[in-house]
Image (tube, rainbow, N blue to C red; front, side, top):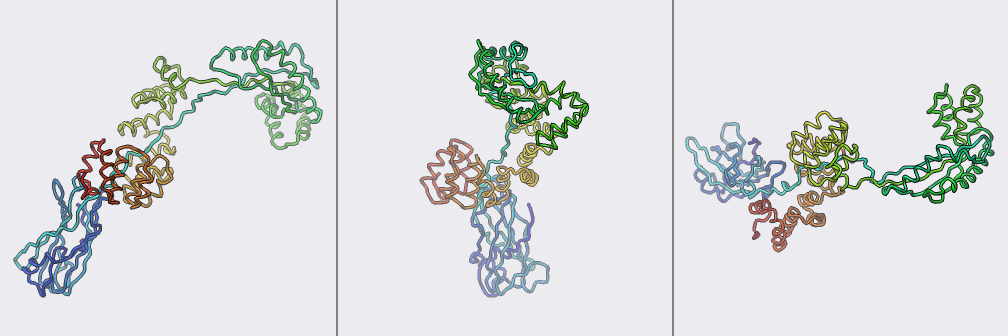
Length: 544
């Protein structure tokens, strides 16, 4: 039990009589007025704190005596007492707090550690008058009832989500072939239509047609000129190539499923030029790339590159011929495995799934045991950090905190998800300082609001939780604790027993007996809530 200075002074010394004898003080004790704030004791952050005010009338406190006062909480199953505090009259030569015989109003703070059972309790003051060799007991005085534990309705397991997978339900790909042209020509050579590139494109079209998971969403022709020569001439050449390629398209796709293409002339292919140079072994290729980054004007680029005569010779032989072309493109969508198919494949052959597929299979698994199995496979096979984190989340959901801690111990401490997870672990352990620090760093308002509720900062909890999606219960509770009952009622959208219990609390505070009864009937689907209601001071005076 924590000790605090109790400025109560004669909280139990009650009555008013001139120059009271010790016996008279005891006899008149019942007439002294005592008040407590709050009138109903409340538990906040595991403590019961209250301020007691005592009016000591004139001529009541005998100037030659010492009194001792002990605040006591009496509850079902026991009682808890603070250390006795002593007070002395005007003429006592000691070091206790002096209470004047002229009368005095004294206030003091009481503080108790909450223990289960104190939901139904009362605070009383017990005392003795110490006069010479006599000890005269004073009547005990009940000060307040309690204790309200509504804040303990907070959902405090912590909100922790899984890391997302990058599984693509629909995979977008392209099938391509190309027609190459000779220098300054837009004529499609017959050898090109029989070449490997066109043949591969035709084979791809056939495979797509036979694949029930694949479909062509559009086709294109994009024609280019190599970036050597005059820009205007190259733009015209690119346009002519797009026209000749469009005519060749019908020959290329005859007997193959492909819609008519969108045709586009792209002019000089500087983008393709940069890519091919980057991938080449040409000497001084870095110098060429630097020129491209320094100049945007095509003529200046070409002139600067031509000035590097030896380099330009290499470009003419290796790069520029590849850019005199028209691309034949089919845009394709492949339907990936459905959630049901992933589950079936994992059951039959888990090694057939890649990392992203395993992560998706785990994400859609219906129970934690199956999720655990799939994430373990992803960790073992791919050393997946996301699977390792998600497995820790599964452990937290299952209450296996030690296993989660072990998994997170060697992971990147700068990762926000890991910081949040460690904050949740601290929250569950009651280390609210560490939890608050973690949630502040990561901007995790859903969990930060829980810390505020647990530490009695109810207005901050409201401000923090009101814009968080999916925290109906805790937001409503924060409003209740902040005495914003209408807002609390409006915040509740869930029909679960716990939210019904909150509605009953709101109704009780608003004096609506019927709503208390109706909502508790729904809440009693959870037996633990029925047991709680029996001793909940929120419902004192109601038939429940």
